[in-house]
Image 1 (cartoon, one colour):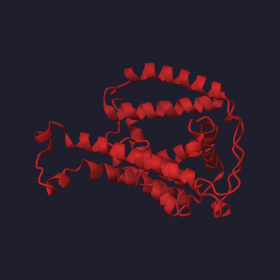
Image 2 (cartoon, rainbow, N blue to C red; image 1 turned 120 degrees about the horizontal axis):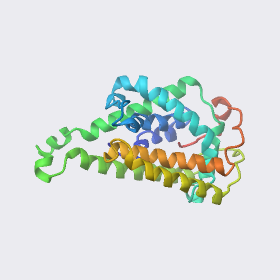
Image 3 (spheres, one colour; image 1 turned 60 degrees about the vertical axis):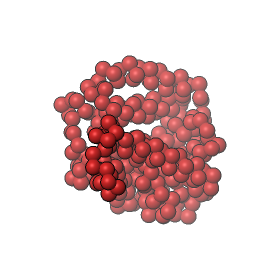
Image 4 (cartoon, one colour; image 1 turned 135 degrees about the vertical axis):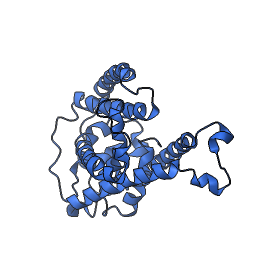
Length: 263
């Protein structure tokens, strides 16, 4: 599979930039990563296999998981964003606005499903060898000694990651993340944030190798991404950046003329 984050966001971020009022950007992003969240349970009694990567899985797995993740993102993004490096390059502080925006539930649900479908579709497209047969390659593994899905995953991860970073940089440079009066960001305490984040990362790095399927790239990568996210949230909490309750959610129509977040 291409890298869950940021690569799998590549197909959906252009949608948000194209029609910012049609989509819930947070829901698009959490939907795009939701199918791979099941890898957290690989090798355990709760192992779901590839069922979350099916059309049925979009409803019974991806939808509730992505909605839960979107709820979390909106409540922690401001506290994390103020501590991220390269703030001028990517305008991270503008993402604090994500915690104040609420969309109609239909928009959020549809955005989740679009994001999740893009993930499943991209995996299918990247893993099929029909593309190779069109150019005369019958057996990629026999010709190269490498399985096609391994090569395609590496290419997909690299290309997707570059696209996402380029879109994030472009949105920051053009002021497309938030168009209006930016809500106040929580104060940054870098020493507290990074100190707590490093402690959580160290503990997690010691625990992850002992988990089931720890040597399998998919589960290992997804667990590592979750460790980074958990460390960031704990760091923001320890720095006091999560202590304030998020502003009351406004409906999308209030932000129609000024909110254009890219994520």
